[in-house]
Length: 98
Length: 482
Image 1 (cartoon, rainbow over the protein chains, first blue to last red):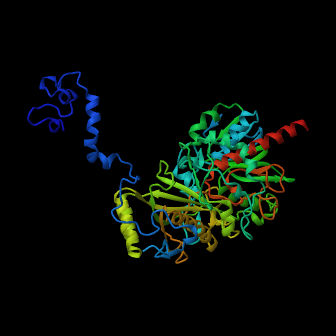
Image 2 (cartoon, each protein chain N blue to C red; image 1 turned 30 degrees about the horizontal axis):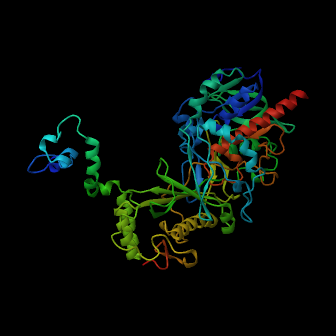
Image 3 (cartoon, rainbow over the protein chains, first blue to last red; image 1 turned 90 degrees about the horizontal axis):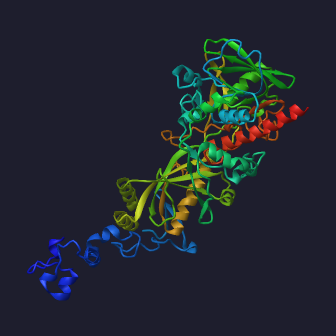
């Protein structure tokens, strides 16, 4: 990851604010002890999201789209007036369940 | 004081305030309560300080009926009694459990839940559980209940030290009561055997049977026979209306992770019908348990669903893969209808002391199926209505086939047999747990339950024991004043 964040020509860190602001390799304190690590991490978050999304996005949110559309009424249930429970092989289903 | 064995002459000269027969949760609770109030207590335990095969064999007996279980493994005969293998599950009975629910099914107690509520906090402390929390509604006809877990408390381990140090409590082990002696409407003494079959006599002002949901009936049946019917003068209910909590797997479910079920440390989410739903359905109470399944068995369940609803199954499988759904096994334990034919009787076979063994006649009937099917259908339809998933019920729940014989079957909750009733025609003890027609014989434990509700019984046993301790304390004070 660290290698990928370096500029292939200059070897400077892509996310170093010093290299961005001055363009000078001398200003890049890439290995200095006081480098702005927090900012780098902050700026790296957008890049990490695609990799970490399956792990960190709550599974119940709308971000995760079902692979296929839910059958009618399956997701949150039919309105009480429309509920028609039927039993098929022991399963208590709505009549609209296919 | 605690003695491993009776010494000759130790009992002969003493008159105790209270003699407790049986050192399980009820007996030990009573002993510590009464002992701490200054009453002189004799606590008699038929078994020893630890498990012994020869002692346990005294509990052998036959179960007559289609559903078999072993009487010598579902209870324990040594100090601490059944708390030595207790799972620690605690719930209080619901208010509706004390009432009549269905015409023709006698579930009514002569007391109400409000009579036990004052003892709840102390009982919770004894079994070491946090305070019970109110149920939460799940739709209009179901409620999500909470099970509390005792560590579990082993009453022998927890209270042995107390029994040893309380100066006015004498605990005798390997002291098996084989007879009660009645005179002029009171029990004057009990006959006790030691392991060498030596006979001793213990005298007290009041006696309490705390020997468990089968032994209390057995002891009274045998004593009644030996005393010419003068112990339980109207024996019509004696040994009868025996109860268990039937335990069966009744189906399975897949659930949306957003469903409001709360899974506890055993991965179980608990629910029950509301009091109104119980009445509307003309059924009794039931406890439903959704137990989380692993993904493989959940996948298999949804594959089965696909056979009857392919689109729904395909969608559910996709949700399962994304962990938006979970699978669950659906189990139930429920309130059995009190029936006179479910009863403890004396066997022709006898134990080494010459006492007839217990023979238990127990079966489930169509009303029991109606109770569990009603509750299960309520849950299935509510889950469907809310879109929280789908439920499959086993064929026997839906009226196709008989009860399975290879399931857990029971909860080792032995109840009834000496039921509480305001009338001696329909019960053995009154609302104060005193045997009808006798002035000084009481019964403690789940054998006094006229009906069982769906809650695990230990917490209620402790509540009843605390209440009985109060009653015995009141009567002792009255006697001393007189």
